[in-house]
Length: 249
Image (tube, rainbow, N blue to C red; front, top):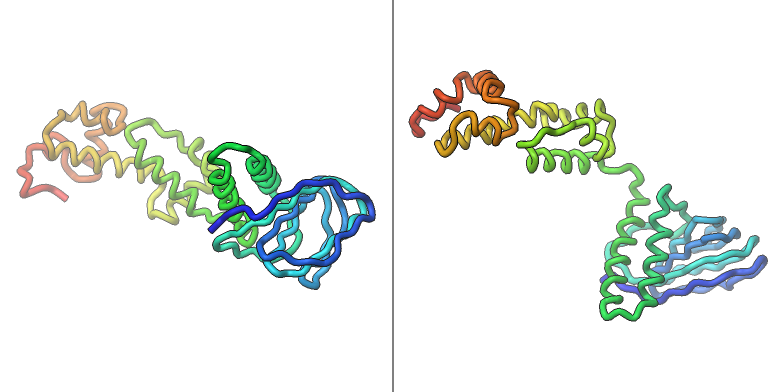
């Protein structure tokens, strides 16, 4: 279970020291404007502004400040937290700093659902901390989101350059990675999807070819007819006349 055990925010003075001690839960100490050294489990680390310490349960640690400043520490229980103890740099967006601040602020609130919100933020914190163990993002995640976007918006004009940027890729990298993952380029995937959807609509006989062309995202009936014939070897109109039991595949 993910939940908060304690929280505290304070200022440390230059040359102030905290004797070695342990906690029964995880602890994160965020150094907003401090500098010094700490011993965590027998290993010495140095900390500075916008770094943070991760302290696993029952691991001895201390703290000596060479430069005074502000810090916040939070004790928490967390499921599936896999990060080792030590000093870490925050990411460029300072996500850890913002999360620690949000947890501290929410914990001070008197709302009836503050505990629930803090538990959610602790869970979010553990995800970010575990990500530090695998700093390279899983590229297939962005591809999966892009593919799902195409699946949900195939009937609209899709700007693949914007889609690539939205998923964290350059266009060339996106096109290469998508084809490597799914076997076809993004544009070919979109066209094939539109044709499959059109084929299903032709089988239902509920719309004419022109209506189906626009429903499935084609510019006009002529473009639809040309692409359909290239893929299936038959025009949409002729396909619609074929009895269902002898359907062309």
